[in-house]
Length: 248
Image 1 (cartoon, one colour):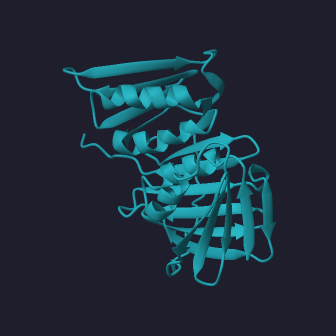
Image 2 (image 1 turned 30 degrees about the horizontal axis):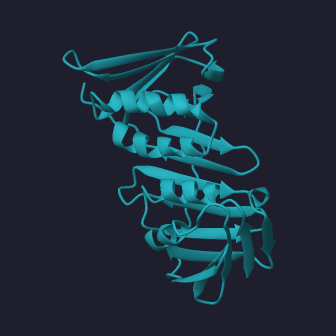
């Protein structure tokens, strides 16, 4: 059993909204370490990893670890009913998630719990040759730029330079991010690398910029991409995206 209270549900709204771009039902593990989720999208192209820390909540009480599966659309609809200045409290009974919204009135929603996912998702251990931390809004803008001209974006890193390319000779965009740029927090390139990824998936992932100040971009040549969006003392949302292998 648990009691989770938020005076400002923004972090919950933003994380759940981003997750729902990939999956319709979500299984959350709620422990003293936080609210956690690991899930794959139905096409098995991307993995979503979420942790909302206890410090993000006004009240965080977990009597024993809980595992709940809910429909995200129903959860999002309830979250949308929270107005400015209202608080939200999550509790659960044996077969329901209870959502209480408190303000000038008290509203109570109940969502049925679904059958737990039997498969426990393991987070793969990956060895990246490129590790870059940058402003999350800038990254989102780069993805939006690429989406204008192509369904795929190439990431290339070498000699203290990150290059994003999309399109062909007809419609094309090239974006350079050099070491020392104000958009960069850090850049570590162990060896030159290049890979291509889906713009559609990256656009969905970059919505996490709504709550995170920075994003860590990790990749290698023709290798999965990992993005880590972090809101200090509140939450971290990570994505692992399979590369697109283009015919040569």
